Length: 316
Length: 161
Image (cartoon, rainbow over all chains, first blue to last red; front, side):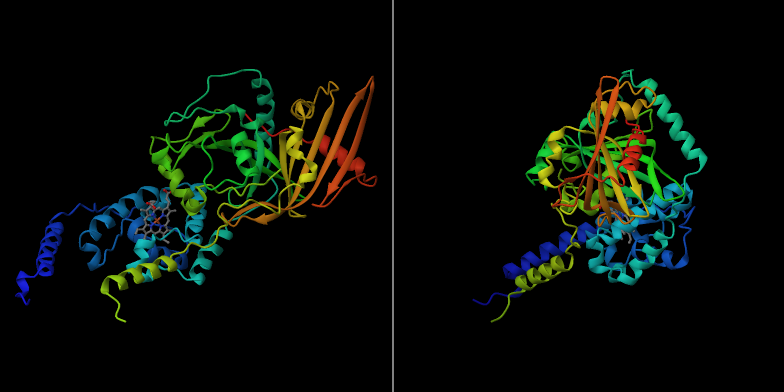
């Protein structure tokens, strides 16, 4: 049976698809143009790398290729740029405080080394964004050069001493427990849990102890931690590092305690975890609005295959 | 054999998926090197964290644990209203954290040092023992004992609101 081309089913389907494709092109979400106000101010060899691999989604200098302008790619690109810029915008880099810039740089590095960034979908068509080991080494060296460890100055020591004295006084009071905007209350019991690891952060001058509640500890004992069971709580407390002239480091002032609370139903929309951070002895809940959890998740993305948990637990 | 066009798309996607494999970050694994010897039954002692420290020269990190008496002592310092105290200092070699450039985490387990202080009337008896390595056993160490007891008793508790 030899029908004319326009009567064949494949042809009809093709025509319908073509019409759909054309119609889709009419839908054009707006990519807002914004000025570059405070561009990345690091060395040129590092900037070149960020420019070619990251700026399309993380700066106000988005440079879409012709195929990015075709729908549905265009909608995906616009959404990526919006999401990407909300967490990291190189065009506003210099507005960040130096400490925040450094923290962001290490976050960036860890997103790159784990292959989380640039987005896989982007690399597919933008081959120049695939970073070579040499290029990654350039970023690594730049970050490593920012690690500066030295004996603590008197200010750091005094802050720690003062805090220790006040803590002993406060110890007897039970103030009302603060809550995050997502409704997670500060959990004072973490200090009675088992330690499941500790970290020495050379990148930000803190040392940490990671605690696990009894459910977490049981999961570790049974080696069922990917995913962690519902009811798991992981708490990470951080202190300044106080280093003496011999390179002995002890814990200084308390900085913050962070929690990941597993409840795959309740926290379905945030990867099954409730996210909380309470800063300083005032236990100030972190986050200007409930969107703060996006920040938590984005930073934890390099360990998305490990139930979003960085900690490699130690069995007692 | 001729491959249908649909299959070549599939093969292409497969290749992409393989190319996109994340570098191994040991997902789901435990920190085996740092694990405490099971013979110690450390988890059954019910100790709490007192503080933690790092020794850059030796590239080690430690966590100091203790019973309630030890914790109180390290918090209050001034009034050592003689309670029974048990301190346990666990030490690991450090290793680079493969999941976070710039961080170090416990590596090979090194030792547990235990200081026990008992009151016997007006007398305070303090003893020291150390357990070295995964296949170790409790030992005395007369040479360093005094210095280690002094060091461990001198630690102040980390502030934990």
